[in-house]
Image (cartoon, rainbow, N blue to C red; front, top):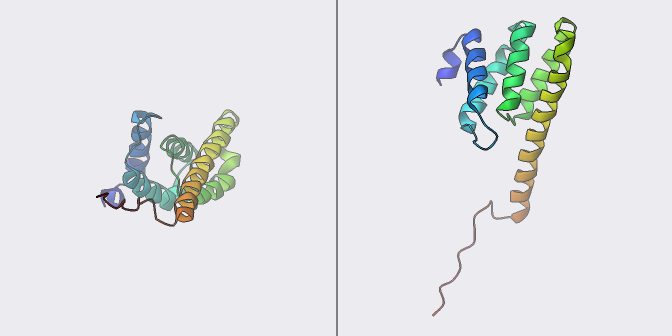
Length: 129
């Protein structure tokens, strides 16, 4: 709820700060990341290239796995690619790679759960007498 009341600049700073605090072995709350990612996707078109770059790198580091958010950022970055500094491009490509890997991992997990047919819940074992 609070993310939607942030200004664009505050949302970018929040994403950047969270990404700096995150580590690969510790997952940041996915609901918080999802809410922040949706907010950033909603304002992406209004961001200047430097802030857009910062958001993209932060979302990659936070392992955002919302395919719609990633697709929106891909579209906006594509429209603004001419404004990015040439040295930023490898990091942009790497960020998109990380984002699509995160999306694929979530999709694979959902497929596995769906294939199990039990939504990840173990069937109760009857008590032996």
